[in-house]
Length: 582
Image 1: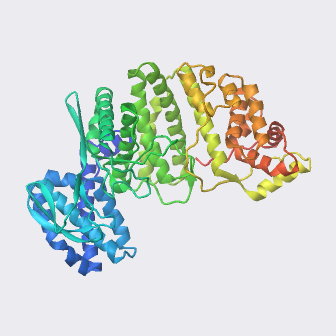
Image 2: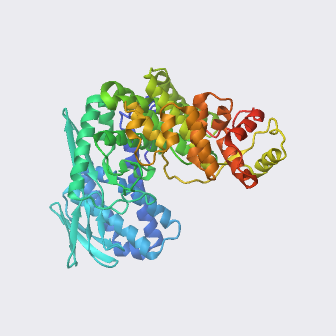
Image 3: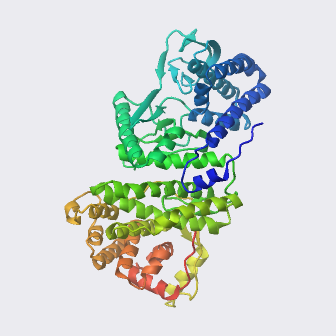
C-alpha cells in the first residue's frame, strides 16, 4: 500500500491558488487510477467469473504489466486519461449496485480496451478480447474507437507495431482522437481532444459529438492564442496547466446559453467545455477548470468539508449550493481573481476595462463566500486552515484600487445577482406569509420585529440575464445606452436605469410588477432602482425581495397593491437583519 503525504508548503501554496511543484498530487492520482483498475478487475472476477474468463482479464493484466515495464511514462499518461477515471468510478458504483450481465461485460470490455491502448502506446505486441458496446463501438481510451460493428459481442483486438486491428470484423471504421499542441516562447502544451469515448465527460453533462475538421481547426487556433497569452502574462500558471491538463472534451452547445466549462473529481486531468469563442475565453476556461482539478486532486488526500444538508448562496451560480460545491466555486474564482488582477494591467482598451470589472466583481464575491464557509460549521480543521489560506491570498487584492466605473458596475452586478437569486430560490414560510398578509388586509401595521423565515427550494440551474447587464457592458465600454436602444430584449425601464434616470426606472419597473404576477426581473430592477435613489425601502427590497414579491402575489386577489406602498409598509416594521444563507 502506497501512502502519500502532501507537504505543508504544498498545502499552503494550493490554498493560495498556487501549484504543486513537487508532483505529489499527480502521483496520488496515478496510484488511485492503478488501484481503481485493480479493484474493478477483482470485482468482476468475484461477481462474474464467467465474464472474467470470456474477457481473459488475467491475461490482459499481464499485458498491461508488460506495457508498463516497456514504456512507463506513456502508460502512466494513459492511466491518467480522464475517461479512465470516469469509467472506473462509474464501473465500481454499477458493480456494487447490481449491474446486469451485459453491463458487467461492457465494463470488462472497457478494461481490456485500456489494456489494448497501453500496448498501443508502449509499442509492444499482444491481443485481447474487447466488447462491442450497444452503439456498435469499441473504444480504446486515449487513442480512439472502432465503430460500425453492430450488436454487442466479443471480438479480439490485435496490437502490433503501434497499430490496432480487430479480428473477425468484416467492416469497421477506426476514428482516432486528435491532439492539439501549441508552443509559445519555448514552452509547450499538448492536449487530446476527446470527442469519442463514452466516458469522456460525466454522464450528467450535455455531451458533444465528433468535431468537424473545421471545428477542430478553430479549437487549435483558440488554444494557440490562449497559450500565448498565458505564457506571456501568467508563466507559472501556464506551466502548471500544461503539467496537469491533458484532455479537452467538447460539450453540446445550447443556443442562447452562455459558454460552459466543467470538471469532475472522477476525471481529474480533463476539462469539458463548449466551443470557445476565442483565445481569451479558452484561457479563462483553462484557469477556471485547472483550479477545480487542483482541488479535486487535493480532496483525494484530505477531507475539507463535513457531510451536511445545508445549502448556500454562491454568486456565480443560479441555484443553492452545498458546502463542498461552495468551496469548489470559491477556489476556482480565487484563481480567476488572481488571473484578472494581472490581465487588467497587461491588457489594453476594452479588454482592460472588462478585466477591471471581472476582477472587482469576483474578488468581492469570493470574500463573501469565504466568510460563509468559515461561519458554516461545515469545514473540517484542515478545511478551516485551507479557507484561511485562501483568505490570506485574497486580502491584498481586496485593497487593490479599481477604476470607479468598473467598481460601480461590479457592485451593481453582484447586487442584482443576489436579489435575483433570492427571488428564484427562496420561499417565505407559508404560515409567516399568511400572518403578514392578514395584517395588511386588516389595515394593521406590519408585525413589528417579525422576520419571516425564508427557505431554499430546489431551483433550476438555467441561466438568466437582463437588459441591465447588456447595457452595463455597453456603458463600461464607453457606448451610451442610446446606441443599443433598439436591441432585442431591452425595455424602457432598463434603458432608464442605464441612463441614470432611476426615479423613472423605479416607476416603470413598478408598472411591470402590477401588470403581471411574479415578474422576477422587474422586482429585481425595482430593488436596484431604489438602491440608486437611496430610498428608505431600498434595504428591505434588497434583503427580503422574496417576501415582498410573494406578499404582493398573495394580495393580488384583493386588488393589486402598489409595490412602492407595500414595500414601505414592510420596511416600516421589518427592522431585523435578513436571514443569510451564504
